[in-house]
Length: 425
Image: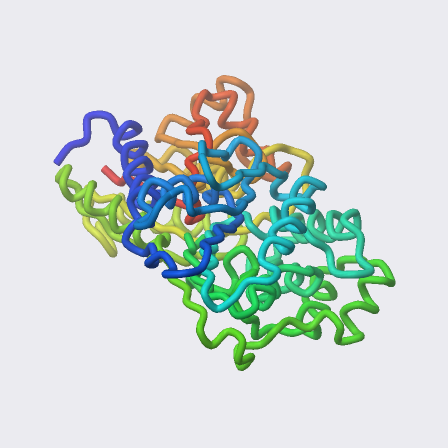
């Protein structure tokens, strides 16, 4: 089977992957029944929270007018809702809008009874968006620590462990605040392994991590913290509610969309087009540039020796890589991955690749990711661009922008993290 336009083919796989994990497709089947006597309060946070709230209103089995509540999402990721309020705030570094929204959500759940239902809508990005510092810690201190973690190369699990222990709402604290109410949490997973309590730092789910682990993570990445934060973590006051807490006994949670769902959909679309598809993993982590080098080596082996797969084929993978920032360039982890792959392949014939974040935002830039082809290095050279030099400066965005190879999708209103597709013809 020959693909006439490899770039368009890869872009179509990305779109199929994103559509497969949209709230419209995944959420309706998980909606709980409305309470018989009590009220329904809808709360939530994340890049997909507003879209999830809109779907709740559209598919609610009771009267939509019975719904009320508030969700917080990233700036530009809003959706039109009639009964559920939508607030936009900053991501990945929290701001005052997120802090105010978190405080309001925490206040809304006070005084609920066993007749009431709390429907909590969680997706990736919720950790930064629900920014309510614990007592004695300022928003500025949390911002500083958050920025340092983002640059350190820490994994999402490590970052969220720290965030939980510096928060008044995450790590299960919001769930406890709901009191006797029935709590149902619906989650779109953006974390490798799909551990529910890690997604958005698990505001309604109990937490098995500890203050000691949070301190160890900060020490591991040599992150300087104020004395107030040090004391907060050492005192034990920051400890999160644990899984054996009986107040969580009646709570429910469902992961409604994952990276595996996105990869399965893309693989099915590729096979329907006559191209054999292989899924490497839905949970690849590590430095983006290292992951790029490994993927390049695999692609070369297929292209040259038909091992471990025969060409033509497309190799798919997901997960969440990290970038340890050493340079002063622009770009998220997907641009970094792809630039590393380009640098390693050095124009190897017959290999095309795409790397994008499923939320439509690569890091803090305006692109979802980028795409490359066998002539990428040659075209870059004609512009005086050297992949290795730009990789050393963490400048993947500028590299692909100059070539016109950025993928700008706009916010997708969902988030299952990285999507990578490598086509070997």
